[in-house]
Image (cartoon, rainbow, N blue to C red; front, side, top):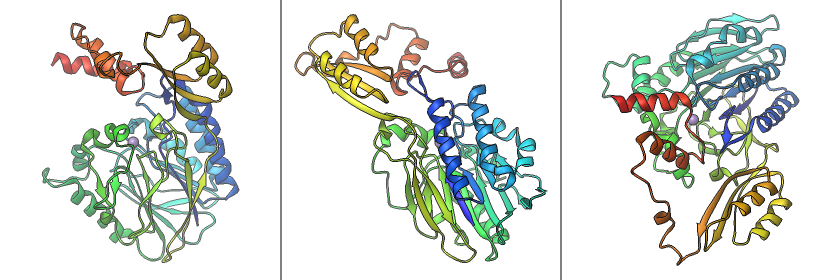
Length: 405
Ligand SMILES: [Mn+2]
């Protein structure tokens, strides 16, 4: 059987103030075309489907349209799980309608879907909390999926009914996965795990991106888990969370991050994005093919001293997102700012920087005015940390709530 693995779509995500929905639509069409051309039997979407808990109608419509297209009228099973950016309820709510198309949605690690079968032969026969066994129309062997959407440590332990709250998350998840694997994953089928979490090979660390990814790695106490926790019965582990493609380990089976379909921050500017195509047969090692994605604008960080040279570069590279740094020994005039913005529609941020010697350091220039009220300071900090994106209303409400306590 053929399985397509993708993750981290982040539908509705902005880069600074710039919307990416048009690019997202294009790249999802590209992924849908690949899935159709390869006639895959199942598509696994490993979390962070939306970028926020309250996605727009446009982002939601794009998701539903894409899931429907991927399912090819039920010829292909589509399984999607919630990531840390998703509202689990929102991901799971359309489940009853989705299953009519062979689409299965998991909001929580303890979600148990109801068995069903479609006329063409696609069926869910055995289910458990965080587990589903699929019968696929064009495959003799069943596909067993252990499914772990994102949840923070406390919730995960509550869901899994762990009585010892001090037990390390690693042990809790490992025994949960092992129990499901021992109960359902025998040699008669293809057995996989899909999860939204941070996993590494023991003894290895992330080589790069750490600064940019730190915020998503440690939020909610979801510390790194290790590949040694993966049950030996599995053929493949489809991960989401980190936006760069890599194989975490080849043991006990290939364990991979597929990558996000688009570069979503300047730290990802030079990453080739992929979907992964897995061919699997019971009791055989899988083969994994990386299929590079071509859609999406490139992201470029550039630095200039002269406004004229910057404008010439901008005009020569219209189809990119740009972080432009202008180095000068004086402030950038309003007139020059206007000319730069006029020369290019994709400037995400324009960073004024002083020549060395003019001011001691850039940090000195970026002085924080502590006379401002706490909410303004929070907004400034949030923008600084999130590429100039302003915090949304729900987040501000939570912030106020916390401050008031
Ligand atoms: Mn994530």
